[in-house]
Length: 273
Image 1 (cartoon, helix red, strand yellow):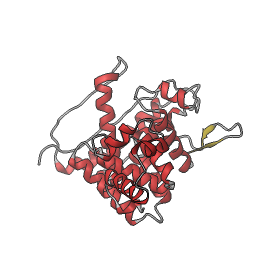
Image 2: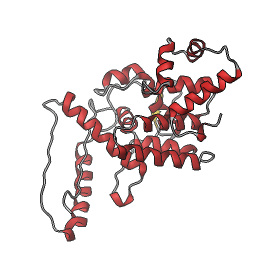
Image 3: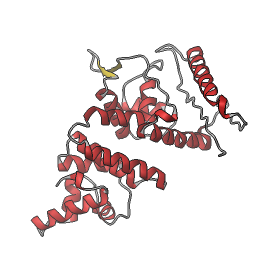
Image 4: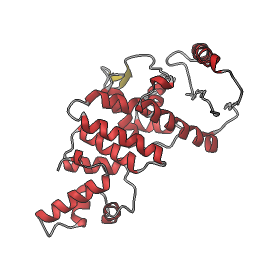
């Protein structure tokens, strides 16, 4: 069954279930749950009835069972992200991505890996962790060092994304190491694409989580409203880029010397017409 005929993960799962029941009327939820390694048929039943959100781990198990290739599995992930959208605006962003992936399914390859990297702050966070003193490319070590709650399975996906983009590779000892010292980027909104917009939405979610749960005396929060003439906005953006570069250059540790990863971001946008 062609996954690209679907834009909803629940409809896709139900179509597979119907196909299997038509092929074998004795095929049961219990036997399929066992084949999917779900542990209980309750989970599968809830998913089929749209009463539980998909997890990426469940998607990976379904993908493995259905023998989805890497690009098809990534499309399945996008369907799940879309179904888990927290706002109409976020849903629209993912629907746009779904249409992009459907139209370019034969050639999307590395572009999709790039999209997933650029749209997920966690990829960049883990990439930066490689610069920490005593870093170990081990799922348990990475999970323990992070304040964000990220499962080992997701960390594994992020590391795979970094490998696909050739930002990290296996050394002679079999351990992952960086192939480049940094991968920093920023966007002006006129250059923004879908990946950058989703990236910043996800950054704001991480910021909200940090404010609620992870603030320490080392944290610094600052926000201002101020008036400015339209003719000086371009100049102000240029100055912000200069200050950003100057700040990072002055305080960023050399590889292997830093003992913490900090998030630094700024937003400059109009709030009046």
